[in-house]
Image (cartoon, rainbow, N blue to C red; front, side, top):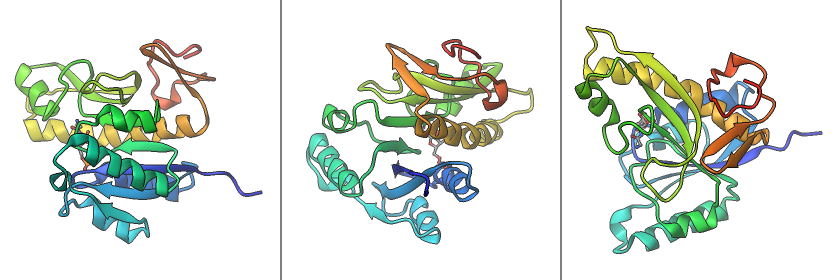
Length: 221
Ligand code: GAR
């Protein structure tokens, strides 16, 4: 019998390296999911070319064509629903979503943020962390709520800041970890192992630190 694949919709604004990490994990057979559609809000987003190379349908829906945020979000929702999307994955999507979007996909939107939330939300988190002088930086996969980078945390990964790091070398180290933990988080979702309890995400049947789970809300980890 064929394995049922989680239908995911990816929203991106940029180069799409996180999209690529998800594609690679799916193609290697590690992630039982299918990218039903990629939607970008910028026509020059590199993510489109990556999707094309892998036969993934993509759409460009520019926020500039809508005077109200809610109308842009409604257009995104319509396209995602038309493609049968069950989980929405924000991969470098640089727009804040409105309640219209969350009403259509309640607790079914994930994001990757290049900082150890709740530190350094918003734009250019890597630069914020670097300029602040932190000793440790990292990234966070979280469910998205109506705030900016405030939703329940699924997985985080930590990188050390070395004395010779620059903003860019730090961003590169963080990105490598993003590519590791985002597919992991989607895989946990696909397996039905994530449960949101208030602010916390419980990872069910988490017996091994192999997924890099240092989440104190993990019941067995
Ligand atoms: C990634 O670093 C991602 O964490 C960040 O944008 C980059 C997209 O890179 N997202 C945010 O800052 C969202 N607040 P990519 O297009 O190569 O995946």
